[in-house]
Image (cartoon, rainbow, N blue to C red; front, side):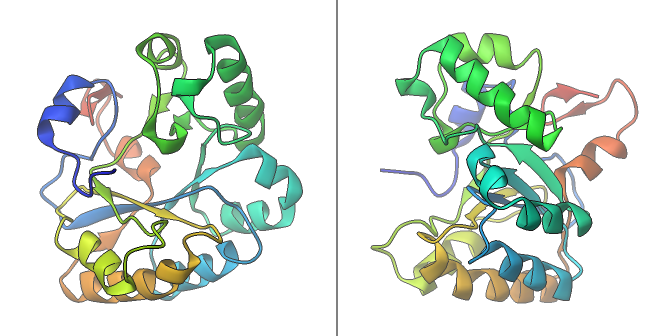
Length: 220
């Protein structure tokens, strides 16, 4: 069970998470979880480059270790990288100390203060510590590209019907998502571009904000 559009009620219950970037500009923030892997990530980079789009890649440390060359490709293309734990751990099923150590192991690789918990699952007791060290990034639009039981057309519709200015959208540069992603990503980029949207990496929202301003409930 998952929600395509994160309800405002849920966003309000966890105000210290970044769910979207407040803006009236036609800007959207595409994010990619679970990479980098050679079978999918370079293809994603090519599609983003074609549309002059920047994105944020929430990387699994183990995959960085296995595929350092692909990780370097992401950074050399000037996309943001973020922390998705070293082993893709479920925070609900992991004790605090092992969870923190796993995140720190990945943090030493990505050198980023953006963190996204795998599955979006994180305990309040974990949040209390992590928010002192990281910007916890969630989403307001889930493409559900990982779902093998939905069609590629439904996956694309999940994105197009839910996106609004400032949306943070989740895709996955993974084998599991490939069936849907190879159709959804180029079509979403093409259609949203034709509607006047631009695609930016998350760091740009913080770089442009005046000091002391709130960005997604985070004080810059």
